[in-house]
Length: 591
Image 1: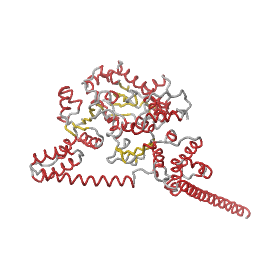
Image 2 (image 1 turned 135 degrees about the horizontal axis):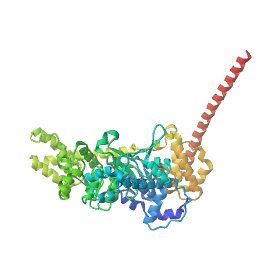
Image 3 (image 1 turned 180 degrees about the vertical axis):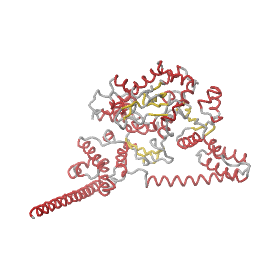
């Protein structure tokens, strides 16, 4: 390992897992462990567990697991070594000048970053050239200033199949690297072409200031030809579900609130008008990863999506995803069905600011939407609405909030406050029972199981269970390693994933290393690390560990023997069939 174990341990000590994860996840103590909502997938019931004793975490919902390095790496899209470097830098620890580790993937990422930066410069230079005047006029006609265009690094792609290819070739980049960066495509006939042609180019920049992707918008008259947008697909440096357009600027201006809009042009226009705390999702539905990214920088989210049906649906989805994040959520409904870009151009910054200040709370928006399609002048319409409204109010965990809205609705619609409060409480009890049932199901039947990541387990259930027990015992009782070393060679393990985990574990124990998660982190993906964490913190090795280890080894050896016997039988049958065929052929020739 390139980075010495004592330095790894010192970095982990200074970046204690509970304190580090608490910066991103609201954790609550449950016994000796801590639980919270998983930052890696959307959930309403906490299934994410932090184990301070083993400095690890595991999600029973999605199977993600690891140590503090894995956690930061997954959130920040970093590999293991990058995560170690980042946390070392945060804690003031100097790493040795040693490049002996395999940094092949990091070199690939660096090349993609370089290509993206060079492509962004190419697109911007073309925009500002005489040939790109058609594109510059589009931006200027949309009300953007030259200063704003430069601030966002906006550009344009020429109406050409190979302009960018030729430019990048002149800079020394290979076609293979261009394809990896997803700026070049390959046709079914084997020819290569620029993915972005005759498009307005929006570079997507991450929180560290790196160009990670592009969004290419067609001119209005060309939208039917090749689609309104062409976006970078996922690459080694980019996952659209984990990024937001404008976050590189907004992160420095959003301590109080972030405004979430729908389109790139909305972001640019609002920034130009002085609202630099605006971001947009990237051609995808709002995701849990984007929620977690925003939660790191702000206290409040203002949802300001388009006023059409699709925009309102997006607001409802985003509102649901923001529940239980600890963030305040408010909603702005833009008048006259306008999008934010249109509204601010027509009404100016002051009217837009007033619109933001008048944003309704998340619960007020839901109460407003609950009345859609209902005749509130009719008694049965009122009853139907109040039933829906009671469900909305019941979803709030804040007793003061519930009391305020119960009072407002009872006064407005002339119903007994006691009756409405009783209905809300009844619904809360029902919701609580449903959540408790879900929690139990998550424990007994988690959405993720080791069968998903170790498919061999379905075929060799008995062997796999015994293998997991052996690994669990050695993780919790490394002093029993000599028993396993003597009786269970690595090649006797039956299932693929467990064999790899066992091999890594044996190598570490042979070197007298403490078998914590960092031992595995460089060689396993997060889902595989999750299996290790679940075994490390499980109950498989809780009692009579030495005897359990011996018994489990016997089961594995027995299962391996049966498999080898079956393989030999298959070979014997094949040999017998081959010999029989030769005899028949010889007899035929003899005749």
